[in-house]
Image (cartoon, rainbow, N blue to C red; front, side, top):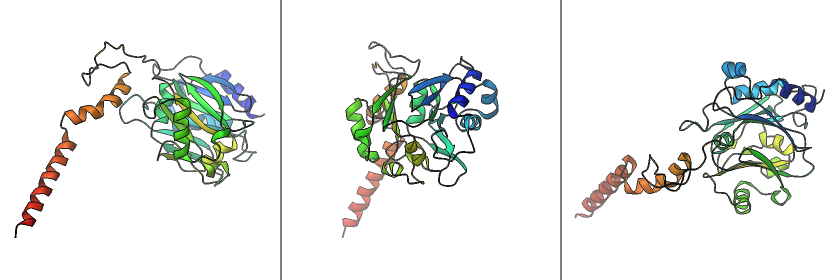
Length: 290
C-alpha cells in the first residue's frame, strides 16, 4: 500500500471538526498532484501526546513504510506546532519530523522564529508533505489556503538571498505577516546533514531535514496573512495595551508600536543603559584628572 492509500485511510478516520476551540487543521499535501486533504488530530492523541512533536509522531507512525529508504518520496515530512504555540507569549516552537537520511533513525528537529506561530495563525497545526513536485515548488499558505508558485528562479539561493527575493516578490513583511521555511544549496545538492532554515538564523538542524525537504523538490513554504479568526481592528479602535490607534490584530499592534513605546517610556533596559553611560563618563572624567 503506497503513501496515498495510507493518507486516504488516515484522513477517513480523523475528525472533521476541531476537538478544542483553538485547534487547527492537519493538511496532507501531495506535491506530485498538488492535492490537499485535511482533518483534525483526534482528541485521544492530544490528551496522550499533546500536539507538536507528539502528534507528529502519531502521523509518522501511521504513514511510515519501513521497507523504503528515508529520501523516498513516500516517506512524509511533517511540520507541527505545539498546543500553545502562537497563543501565549514566548510559545513559538515547532517540530519537523520524518526519517533521518543521515542516520537512519527517527528525524525530529525543533525550531522557533515565526513559522510555527504563523502556521497556527493560518488555522493549521500540522503539515504532512509527501510526493515529489515535477519541478522546484514554492508553497504559499495565505489565510489558510494553499497556493503554488514555480520556485525554479529561487534554485541555488541560500537563506539571506532567498529571504530578500521572497519579500520583494510576495510583498509581505517578515515578522509582521510573513514567515518561511526553506532549503539552501546544501539541501538542493543532497547533503545529508543539511538543515531547513526557519528564519535569518533559526534552523531545523538535526537529522538532515534539508536533504529530506529537497528530495520532495520543495524549495520553501511561505505563510502570509493575518491571524486566524482574529480579524482586524477598525481604525477607530484604540489598542488597550499601548494606548495607540491600530488597525491590526493585537500581536501585530504589539510588534508595531512596542519599539516606539520603549523609546518614550523608560524601562529597565533603558535605565541600565543610562546608568552604564553615566558610570563610564564619571570613570573617564576621573581618569583624566592628573
